[in-house]
Length: 230
Ligand code: DX5
Ligand code: ZN
Image 1 (cartoon, rainbow, N blue to C red):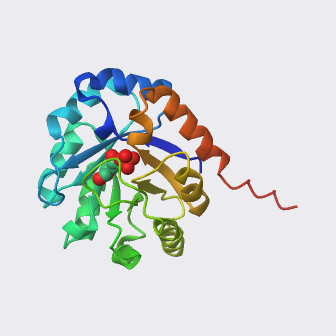
Image 2 (tube, rainbow, N blue to C red):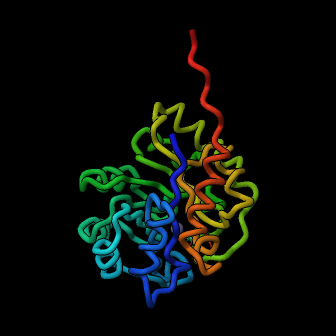
């Protein structure tokens, strides 16, 4: 499994989103990460369905939509229609997580479950065989530019073990929050295969170059392929 880079447009210049998306795609972005916040599940309010529709018109990379909202079941259809290729929902917001995961998959969208830093890995034990990916939050969701929570590295390894035990070896782990040139290697070594990065990509003023450099760092941290057995 390669490492995919998913720049978070939360830190982009919203006045020129199209240009920013083209820049990260030139830099090799594999996904475009879109942070949807409702001011209820998290303290911040960001963007919604019309912006996802607009991004869909300009992006060639798949849209990875991270729903940080209460009652996400109400909006899954709308985000799928708007162009999401991947939808992640927070386990903390959902009493019927199994049903939600199945509903997302039924729309032809990849279903991810997201875990806040304080949420134990066991919270997704019963759906580990069903999900298309797991999103480990390495900051408390709500804002870009926060510091990486160091414990998240071992959490990634624990989620990997859980998915493998469930027979879901192909489901990648996405990590989101405080990912930069320093933390990328740690999380890839622990098993993360989709890296979300907002401020590390956009705050330096050259998102194309930052995407390319983060991707190279992440690729270098991949464990060497095991030699073929004789
Ligand atoms: C935080 C969001 C992240 C955010 C990451 O709640 O889910 O996707 O954009 O930003 P950085 O990379 O700056 O931590
Ligand atoms: Zn996110």
